Image (cartoon, rainbow, N blue to C red; front, top):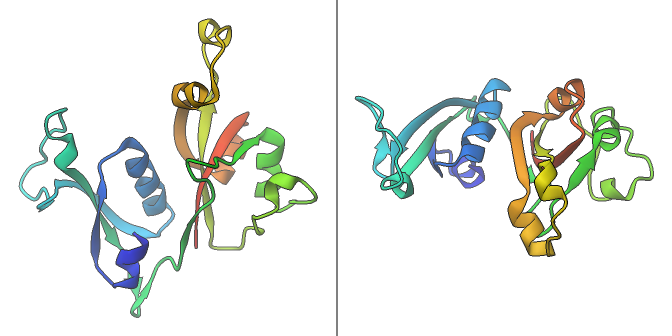
Length: 173
């Protein structure tokens, strides 16, 4: 999306994944993008939507309409706060501190600046493992592969729902 905004493209394609759909939807609800449409590598589905199956999932795309006003994009930048090799996990206390801009001396926030008006921070809930899985011992790579994630939401929604654990996804402004 970042490169499409810089090139002033009106629409861009993203891989069709559950997380991309959820993030795009949250960006649309916060006024950063104008539309989301299913399609393929050839373009958006215009006549009727084609169902996603295991055979065609590699060719499916989400076509996201980008918003511009007076030749300026609705969002200036999108920064990933967490990357797969270095996920940034927060507990409820840390989520509340970030939402209230009380970053204090917590080392988790050393590379994160305070949230400004007009910004949105998206998080993804980390669901607890079931009782059977908690007794197993995992290597680090197995633990990361078996970790279960919940819905994508914005920071204020996570605070209101008292999410106990989450991972920071991105910041858009």
